[in-house]
Length: 442
Ligand SMILES: [Zn+2]
Image (tube, rainbow, N blue to C red; front, top):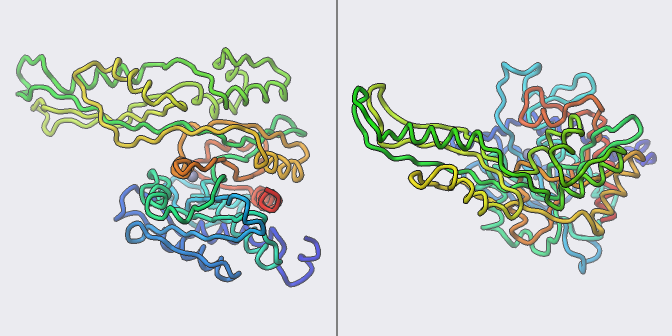
């Protein structure tokens, strides 16, 4: 690598900051509405151009005008090996510039960080992958297995115009893919100066968004009335919102607690996960939602005039289910709301879970340890959802592995969709080095 630095060829980590910065400056806000979502096409063209510059052929697939996905395949030296899918989304959640310390689409560098909406979710990883592939192409490196690159649209609104659409309409892109890496994992959490956990995502909760429909008798607001849809809905919503579902320890959470217990030298009883998680400090908020199903009311709609009792009322409930628990969760909700309110699913994606073992996991761990001797890779479950859910439908084993070494005092999980989202510049460069090692050896 040092010889590269002194020649006119860029060194491995030279480009990543500029690539990420360029991507951050393309506003790819995903509002959930095709008319107001912006920039995905421009970002896709940017990626395609950066790959074309080094001789990688790409295809851009649009699911709707402007909703662009970029795919490419880099041929490995051993065609008998299954391909590895490396995926990252190009869209971001919207950002309100008034709330930020810097403009969210300015790509400013300040205090050792690159700032902007998407800096950690997930233009950082998009840029790291581009940096590694460009370096390989320039220096003649070929991976052993085929690597399929997928830069997707629409992850932030569920992926109907991105990963899920690609899986439905362009399944052949993923031919031969057996394993995948993407967000949200591979980031560090400092135990002390010498030791860092690296959380590798091996499971994701399911997404079970549903709408409750209550019906009643419409009428005049001045009358005595005992069949009011708003009252019935409000009671059901309050019961759901106050309910605590029972704890369940899945294999991933059990493996996480066992590893962390040993590393921290504290007793973490997997049979009492709530008490165990309470001992984990700041990391508890990442793990806390992965020991039970959850159901949070998020929207209420009813009525059209102050003195009219409406005949209908609806509420949206954001539910997240543990692996294998979606049906059980529905039964639990049914019991809470009673027989008179209808349930309609507006989004239902199964949870996914794989084991923390095998050659791919060994390669991730080895690459992390080579770049950070204090690295302790551990598996964990993400309480949210990612594009991995779409790819898992093809039988692909999905991991969250977008390596980042973070400073001990950074509240990383708060930056996702948060104000002043930013990524440490040296963390980006670390990620490139880890990915380069991992992708060469996996
Ligand atoms: Zn994301």
